[in-house]
Length: 121
Image (cartoon, rainbow, N blue to C red; front, side):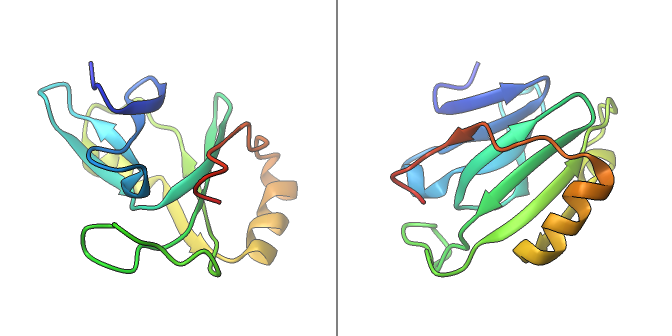
């Protein structure tokens, strides 16, 4: 179990190792490592049985110690049961802007954002 996990659904984990600004959606490899699906800084997430939706402010440095609150990227992750990271990675769509996300949200019946980290918004 990861000590810095803020959300988990199956092997999808929202984690921040050293600081909350590093919050990213990752795939738990079940060997003590996790591989990134959506990089920092994730600040809101929602999920249902078919999709995970994520809002992210892009990090402004390689260590994600700071991020750009003026830019919001949206991601849609189509869930997979595959144990392979590459298959999970294929399900990631984004980054996209709000307008594109809103169109897809209607056509795909995407879940609502249900968890937010207001200090990262």
